[in-house]
Image 1 (cartoon, rainbow, N blue to C red):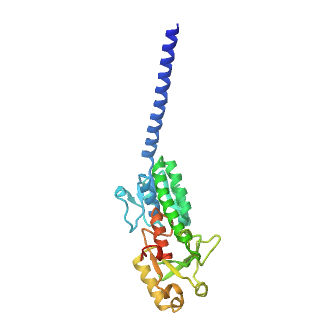
Image 2 (cartoon, rainbow, N blue to C red; image 1 turned 135 degrees about the vertical axis):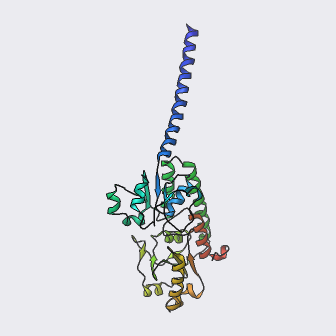
Image 3 (cartoon, helix red, strand yellow; image 1 turned 120 degrees about the horizontal axis):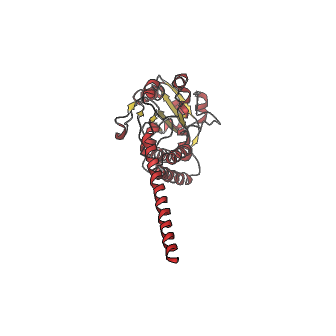
Length: 301
């Protein structure tokens, strides 16, 4: 009797082990199948960068001048991030469409008529970027890739904060966002570039509790006396940067500012910089830090 009981216990243990291993195997197969079935459309380049870091497949990517990663070479182009093609996106039969919160107003009635509800990622700051990457890593079983990406940003943050800590005063910084058509906006502390400035130890001369961008005001700019000016060429840099140069030459107000007098005016271009946070955040922090505190390292022009 004792022998038969022992055998029964051994058999029962083997059954339990096989059951557990089988459950794990099936769950992994289920997760893999779920990922294969996922048909993801990224309507902005920032979302493409996140997907690339997380090794995610994409069936649709934005039409952009930025270099799309090779893995998405055969993905369909769905149009400009500010005005994507609803028809093209619908034809791809997506399971999810990603955009960013700053473009939420661009997705209106046309998407509702097609029964497409885009998911808007909040990329207005470095912290929001890290939260988004972590959340997507968990959702798509890419925790290791997400952790690696976030760790790189954390290291860059720690470095620039140590640099800033060695200085008693923060440089006064003006952030401009250029728009095609000889116009520009002022980026506040609520904007992504404003957040880069704050993390790197700069003082944004224009702040707001809610607005990312405000209209320019010559008197306010002159009164702020910025020591550093960052000019973001958000779209079409080949047009926007010459516009900035023309504006700075034609308007005598700019020549009165310390930043212009001391040649501390810098142009922020893609792919390292954009209006929303992206996976080049670590590099962007290093560049901004060098601009604010050039004596701490090689100045990046």
